[in-house]
Length: 225
Length: 395
Image 1 (cartoon, rainbow over the protein chains, first blue to last red):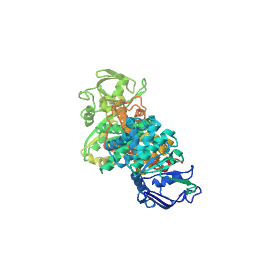
Image 2 (image 1 turned 120 degrees about the vertical axis):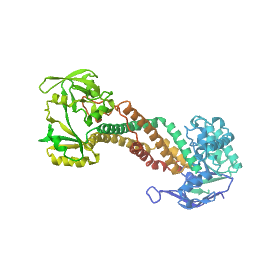
Image 3 (image 1 turned 45 degrees about the vertical axis):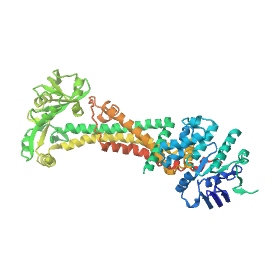
């Protein structure tokens, strides 16, 4: 399995007055080259689950193994290194920096890796060609359409060629046409060998043909109902 | 190694674009910081230039000056003292000098009148301070005038003018030359004349002088000889050249010190502003850092970004501030600080300062301006850099 969670519990502010138990003994296994949807209402623990799968933090207890590395044993610095080699993120509203150009947004993950400007341009160029946004290369990201913005976010998630793509409520602010476009790109990426985890309660996502499994999350637990 | 350098180049590149994106805010900081550096650097340059200028001129002063004191006040010294001094081994020459202040009621200015004996070693030093190559002193009634005094009295070489003697009779004088502008710090209000003319002007008898200039054979023995003189002539005050030089340094030192304290207060105020700017994150900055961290930037990378931003802002401000300060001191005659450093005399020297820009001074300036700025921007950046990556995710 590429992603394995075993009895994972996450407690924020443990031992303090504002302690919150976000996940309770969650067990989950996701095979390579599959597309999984985490479905649940707001505050159900989807984002916490996504954060653990995305190596942003380790669980309070239980075992989480992402791409062969157990998270609990990795210090924060190594979590970051493991994350940038393994995970590509697509955020809700895409989290693109509007003042940067399209190309600069796409290559942001490469800067701390010491990749030269020429190599960055080449890698971004390939992705911009694939996603049909090459003509917007030097445009400020704040001046392009929603559909193009979505493709910029996807290109940025793929720039390090990670095996896992995580998308957090990607269609929450898109119309149905753009949502369908997005899912088609995800389906193509799955075919290309990526493992994709999407949090969403949008039927266009949960009921998409490319989705292999929908996992319900409720009150910090896997919803088996 | 290449990857590390490439990574720092990438972060610097991003820092530059980040500064440019917030160019209005950062431009404002550069301008304010440059103004503070300009003030501090101007003061440092003026002080060093004045000290240098004073030292150059005082190099021609006698090694020891002897004045007679009575009831705590200076009085004319009998020339007979000079004979007793010549018995001390190591004294090369003893030359009487007559000097005093002449108050010009019309202009409200005080001129320093100095009488010099022809051929005395001091005359050679003063001669070097004269604008043209005229041998000096040239003759009875001829004077060499400082630039500020010449301007006040509207004098030029060859012009005749008169001063009042104590009995209110007029003493005619003729301008032989004007002192060079480089020596203005100590010659601005000076009117130098043959010693006989100075005696005549102040009514000092030929048996007395204002003080005695003592020249020693070995400058290393100045202190020893000064001690011997104080023992032989207990009614005198012995002033050595190093003491006079130190007095000048102290005078400029306390003035610049006083002003520096005021400027440091401005620097501290700026540091507080910079701290506030660095530690307070706008929602937009917070979001940007969270995005960078979730995309794989480490805390150290974000700190590096802040460090480069600080270096660029401080570097630009330093270059701008010091360049303006140099222009202000060299071409603007330190117009802003002249009253503080030169005093409030009616006759102020026109400064032609040539600051000595040494590595030590540049480093000192960096230490009191750029380093505190970097400290107050990078240290609180820890807070900024520790924005959790998950805050980029939705609910």
